[in-house]
Length: 498
Image 1 (cartoon, rainbow, N blue to C red):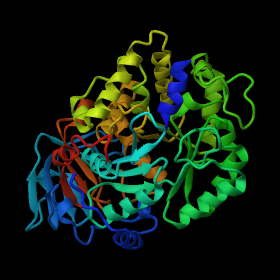
Image 2 (cartoon, one colour):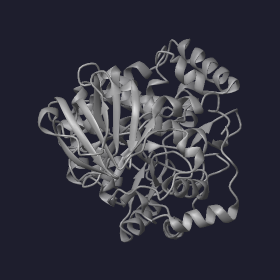
Image 3 (tube, rainbow, N blue to C red):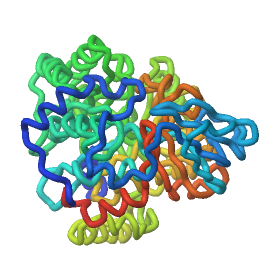
Image 4 (tube, rainbow, N blue to C red):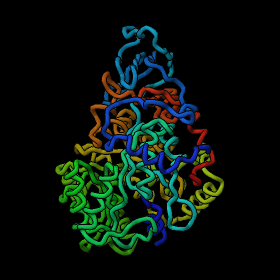
């Protein structure tokens, strides 16, 4: 979250009906408290709004003659059949020996690949607009964009409007609106100094623990600390989250990665580019000054040296996951990424102009260190995974507006491949690894009998050409197949508005 806020400092050195409050409260009460951990089940009824985007909804659906990338890291299998019964995968096998059950809806999907639904763990339901330090909630466009891009489960890695996020989760789970399953992260656990109007500044360790208690009681299923938290506040928040069986992640600065690992943190966002461990003279509980001190320290650090390899060993030994967010970092590299017309079309005219102006400004910065930093982050992520670390994937749709959900989730997988992972490995990072972190690997993250029928069907073969992951046709969630292009089209011109 707020990489624009931080990176700006570095680089400078329609149709959803209104729902009444009563209805929202009823939906929230009816939804499972730990929605991210629930087994597969279909909504009792889909609303007329949600049904607009349903391509196939039948008791038994057969996906026939597909190429299968199952998320486990196994080699792709050709000419497979996947049988979906209700909300569950009931059979997977060669098409020649896996007959369609009587009365099933059979889809001949020759030329398509089936993947697990994406499990992306650094997502948001807000977006940067204008110049005022306020992030606008995007409860209309973002859920449908995430689902259209193949994300059937997301974790919101930080919330600006936690009540809204919790109510949106309930609305999705009950079929009122389309979207992915959501692990809702509570408000940011942050100290003074950020300068964003929507973020509470912690006053003590008791305040941090109290925030975790309050929001866990109200439906948050994970938590995130931020740049100006103290070690005492972070430790208290971690202890309270763990007491409730929940996890805590962080985008750090004032606390080092080594310190956070010792405190028992579960996940670290963004990778090494936000680690203050390498800043000379780093003071405890203080985000180093000047603003580009962390970036400069990373630029001067050997990714193959003992300082980094020792940090990796420490993180792995403490079972700390790392979330790759290459999709947001790429937007700060001059002349990257390629401008995607489809993402521009999703923006309002004002948001599009803002993004293109900022992109042009970055492209003119001949002193930018981001090309070097971006490559170092890729190198760190490969080394972390090779050492046995649990690498996760997210897209972080913040920055200066160049990261649009759905499209950015696909781009994140492509960037993992650019980093040196094979396409099959990258798909596993964005599916099974996320499921493992969320404690849901028994239900989601792979394609196998007994698992939830959360699937992505794409045209082509992303195991050979990773860019084919962009060719989403069907997204199956809880056994219901949604038309990806209809969902994308429904959000055209809305990003930057709602």
